[in-house]
Image 1 (cartoon, rainbow, N blue to C red):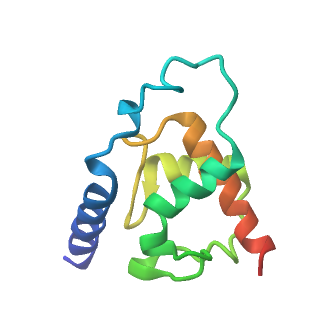
Image 2 (tube, rainbow, N blue to C red):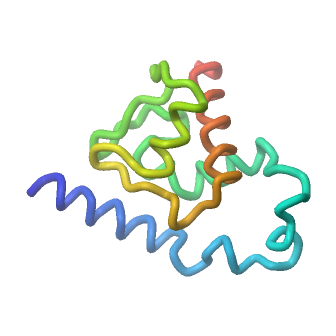
Length: 117
């Protein structure tokens, strides 16, 4: 029951924070660019702050709803990508909200959180 409640809470927060402004609706400069430059590291930070801060916190160590402490995580970028994409435990996956490039940018940004401590 607690997991269901946590899932519903997180899902509601995701929808409330980013559900209305779907990333695919921004067609002005980057929707037709599967061959254009990759998502910058700054975009990884921006996306993290939009979707991940609620549970992981600004510095990755908040741990709300059982979120992993990203400052202590030993996962590589390649190991973080499937977690962000598909979710794990109470974490919701983001494959429906973010494309592969943006997920990778977030994964790369989360690696910097342990360096900042």
